[in-house]
Length: 296
Image (cartoon, rainbow, N blue to C red; front, side, top):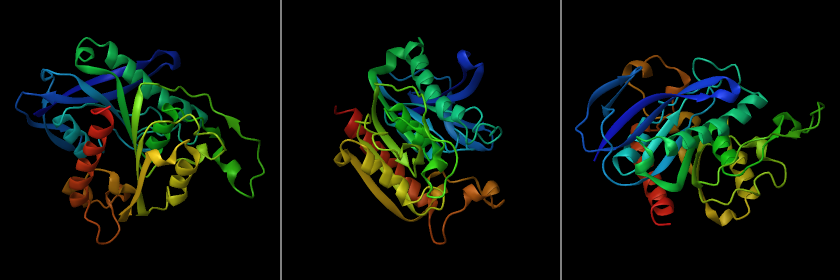
């Protein structure tokens, strides 16, 4: 199977916002090299979807990130029987980060994942090929927050309230949209502080694969502890720490020209092989989703 790609712009009419989405899917059409910004992928633009029905996987990037940063994972999933939708979160991406740290961002992120799901299940090009109500979310960093919120988590704001020396206003519950179609989560170095209050994750009943990084100053191990201590059944969480990895090690390997620039997202702890790790990571995620989505 090969990888087909369709680019689209989705609308959040209620908030007068739009956001780009890149959808990957199985196709029988032979791919060619296609550029997407600075990245090149072997895909077929607007190719016919291969016959069959497939689970849907949503991908939520980290704060200030991009929907193109998980290519090694998403191409692998599409090649092996998934329709994968990657959106770029408005106001919290690489070119427009004005909503970082706001309540709006906490509300918009899960809302836009749900709008994407609604759109694809209603779109004549994709709906016939989607398994009904069989959706997973992969979330990295702030994307992990979005995944948990969409799957039933109830976040609180502001997060600073949980610091011992906090003297500001009392926290308030953030009104977020949930989606019962979510059947599994993959959390990569998730940001979870908004779920620290007791019972904030009591509505999350789906199985979770959760990976943390050994050297992560942004979402250290206690973020994972919030999930393990907050969900109703921690036995449904498969959690492990990736040895010697950093927070950005979950991003797909960058082209050499970008790596030579030395930007923080391209760097890893000394001795960590990101290329080798992503060969293993994409297979681990595929095996997990096959188990949770295709055998349920």
